Amino acid sequence: MEQGLMTPLRALYESYIAKGIQLERDKKPGAGLLGLTAGPKDDPCHRKFLDDLQELLAGAQAAALPSGEVCQALAYIYRAPLEHKEPLSVYWVLQAAHGATLGLIGLLEPADARTLRDDFARMYRRWERLPAQKKVLEALEKAAE
Image 1 (cartoon, rainbow, N blue to C red):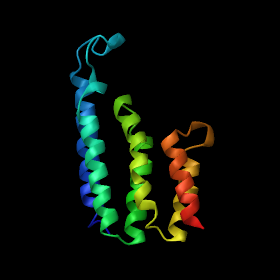
Image 2: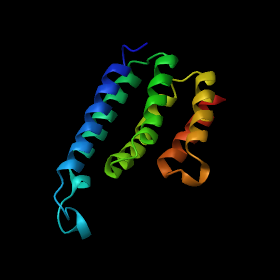
Image 3: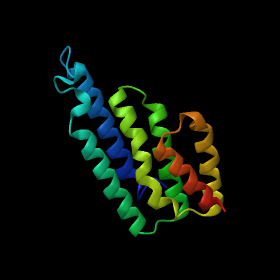
């Protein structure tokens, strides 16, 4: 089901990743070095991406989408940082975006939550998890019961 949430979600991610790559290509030598000048990581596109994602996911939560569609969207969001490790400014924002998914996890049926939990635990090993990912895993554990 590529309709509904997945179409705008993919468009948002693809646009943001392309912008991040372009910022990295266009940076001037020494930009962002020692924090003296702004670099690609300081661009407002990162905050805008997180705000837009939050808005999109809040709309999906309010619409009470079916578990299968939510599961597909969450799997996409959770996999994104692993598929886009460069540039680092984008990678870290994609990692932080996991925190925006907490509200949608409650819409999952237990079987979908178990599948996502198991995949997530394999993708992000315990010692590599950031606080947002620890919260996601806790929420998936709870939804899987």
